[in-house]
Length: 339
Ligand code: AMP
Ligand code: TRP
Image (cartoon, rainbow, N blue to C red; front, side):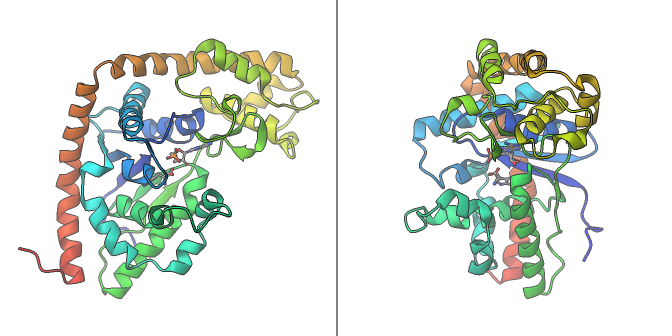
């Protein structure tokens, strides 16, 4: 099966659960902006239904949803060029998600490493939604027949599962209805690590605030976090190969490369042999110069929540116009009677 009959369409989503980190920005939002162009339909979603797989205070959820929209727009997503909306306003996601719950196998879900990491030893107490989440994510993508899915490295397995669900649906119902979406995992920032431990991902939920850069951190805090970031005793190496087995050094070089739109090779060329005392302040200045305008624009946009809600409603109408006919067709394929 090929994607030949499907037009190129980009879809991705981010959870509005707590603050956004530089990992979300470099690994996801910045790349969404780069993929946005007039010839490709791009659909960017605030996946609020995914957020509630772990407890979210309702007022915090509303705030995080609007703040994520502000971050998308402040970073360069244009709601006229792309479709920008929150998942819960387009009910087709949940409806196709149910069908996919009946297509996906429990054994497939049991292999999802993110579930295992998040549930830990607590598998009896986490929500059923957290377990079924990858099947809703497959619906998010496939309800638009999306062909390209820009994500960070941690989402690769979920996009592969999406391909398996599409293939099993097509096979079981003897149709060629869903495409095989491609994960797009590119650039130097597909996995930004925690600033205090280069073997762990930078995440919204890490224990210490010092381990991540938040999109809302001010210049002084960004500088302090980079200054205190874990590095090692050696100066920067002469070649990229010299970053092997130096996870913290590798991470800081990759962050620099992603922020400056270059490559780790180019960064190493510029800083070969430099001490951390020189590199870290330059990295902090670079980060401030890139992130501060975004956070200022986010604050400005957040002063008008009604406008953000209007943008979401318009985006949801446009998303629904694509999703509903695909859902109708899926219902027909499955054998549901429609009025
Ligand atoms: P989430 O915050 O889990 O909804 O993630 C939203 C997007 O950001 C996904 O595409 C993730 O892969 C990406 N992402 C999250 N954390 C990082 C990170 N530390 N490095 C790179 N990408 C990330
Ligand atoms: N599961 C993704 C994450 O945690 C978010 C997400 C939900 C998503 N639906 C998606 C990403 C569809 C890409 C496409 O980061």
